[in-house]
Length: 317
Image (cartoon, helix red, strand yellow):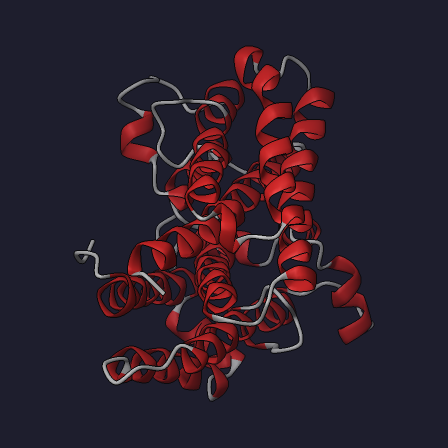
């Protein structure tokens, strides 16, 4: 397979997954801001959403205040934000067109029809909470349809493996970020950090935002506690969006794409997966959840660079 084709497939999957992550991040932030001030405290949840999305600096070049309207518009519809949902969907469609023959009809129809349907929304934005909720749900359903189409209809060859590699790598990054959405702008080991760590409502909203509340109840059959939520989202291999499950997917797909020059990339991914396998929840909390997730994100970024250098013949980011 040409490296250019592999690059298009890899980034197509990443853009679709990223659009869903941004929709879930906005949804999670809306859930938290809907809580009484007693539970949310002094933390600006919209600032946290920007930080975890990695666009805080560019946001403040355009807006002066991080409030619901500004942040939702920037993360969802802003053409100037390379990581906005709008740009993710448009870039996914561009990549789809470039590798149209490598995709099935169902996959192309999902991306193309989503792009067409969202044209009107991008032009006027969302004026009510109901419209915003409908838009966010549509983005998530588009990602689910695309993922389901790929799983059910693609031939198991290099095109499929590169697509799944991009999906799992992006999902590992996104799960870590959405777990960290409340802690990004809080000083480690501070009173606010301790209070938010024990916030029942926050952790319930996180589970709901990633469609994991029912899974949590099936696994633990008990009240929601921070330690169990973190264990489920980081260390439980049966949880599809957990960090361990995502790294397992990365390793499986790297093995299917093995070449004579891919040893370093596979070793790095395997080491990162092994560290998750042999971690326990006490170690994570002792290190500090925010510090742990920050380190994990840095290593996933490094892994992405290795993938680009090994398979896609791209310069390191």
